[in-house]
Each structure stands twice: as C-alpha cells, then as structure tokens.
Length: 289
Image (cartoon, helix red, strand yellow):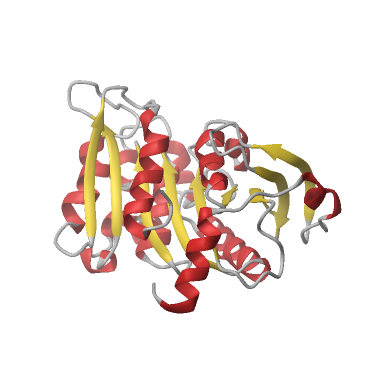
C-alpha cells in the first residue's frame, strides 16, 4: 500500500510507547464486559496494553488493545485475528495465544480472538460472529490490515474467512496444524460428531461450507503459510495431507505466496511458530517485523 494511508499504517504497526495514565482514563468500549488495564507485554517490546472482553451481539471476543491505539484515531492500524481450536474459546488469547498476541501488541497492532459460537466451524453462527466482530472492530478503529492466525479446528473458519472475504484488507493466513477439509477430517478425528453436529447433521450443509470444496480461484493473490508435522511424527488430530498440505498444493498456481513448513511435534505447536508468524506477516506486509 502506498501514499499517505500506507505511511500511516506503517507507523501504527511499528507501535509507539504508552503511559499507564492512558488506560486509567480510557473510556469503555461498547458492550465491554471486563478489562485488565496496564498490562505489559512479556516479550522484548515491553509495551502497555489493555486486555478487554466484549460481547458482540451475543458472541464474546477478547481483545489485546495497545494503549497507543485509541478509539476514533485517524492513523490506520493493523489487526491479527486468532482462530482458536476445538474445545477452546476467546480466552485462548489468555492461554496458548498469549505470547504471539503480545508480539502483535509490540508492533502496535490489535490482537483479537472471538468465540465464534464455540465449536461451530463454518456454520452460519460462526460466520455471522466473524462478520459482526469485524463490523464492531472497524467501527471503533481504522483497521486497514488484517492477518489471520489459526490453530487446529479454527483453521476451517480462518480458511472460509479468507477464501470468501468475510472481512476486507486480509494480508495473509498463518496456519499451525490447522483444519482445512471438514469432510475428510470429520471422518477421522475425535471431533467427528462435533463437526457434523455444527451443520445439523446435514451432509449437504457440511459440503456447502467446506473450504476444501472452494475453487482455487477463490485464493487468487492470497498469502498462506501452513506449518504441519512431518510424516514421521503423525498429527492424528488434523492429518496434514488432507489439510495444510492439501491447501497449499491446491492454491500454489494462483496464490501470491503459498508455503509449507514442517515440525516434529505431531499436533502440538512448536515454540518457533510464534516468531515465525511475525516474520511471515512482515514478509507479506513489509511492516510487521
């Protein structure tokens, strides 16, 4: 992105320091449920942010809001959307996603994780929650770059969001052991009943909402990196050949950047994934480094 707007985004994503006084006087966000103010990132950046829980039309969302980002500002800002795994919720931002989310805050960008109805994959409830969350966030802050980070079952909604452009300004998707093919995976993982139940046990609905059924053309110009376990270290929960590997192989002819990377931890997330996520986003945007 070039011109004045592009410059503003670059400055916003690089981040600026903030003082505790900002949080002490910050107004509540609409439909705010709770807030822990003046949190300092545990990573090298040591930036201040507020950890905020909001209720967006019945779906909970947790937001790590850098104190340098204020409601109504004109300087554009980026956001990283974290898609949680099965059995988790928006509070994954306080758990397994906390460290990478704080890396995002270090760069002056917003980190957000929505519940999306829980384990609803890509059904209407989950898709509506995603759209509502974007409308909510974009009404408060001038978000002009969106990055997607998905793990495990959260990959399905992340893939749907990107391929079908549920939100604008998407710069790329970083997947870790993440779900892509709802049909193939639902027959082998423990979540089979959960996947089918999300679509009312209606096979036609599951097929219609399965990202693996979308044409490659939906991914034209996309940026995707899939981190999966290698063949000698089986990921029995989300088999890579039907998911991350299948996605990258399918979209490579039309994508701007489609990459695979491997690890040896099965379905566990390797520690290097978090900083690699930031490096990858930086390569796609030129600012998140």
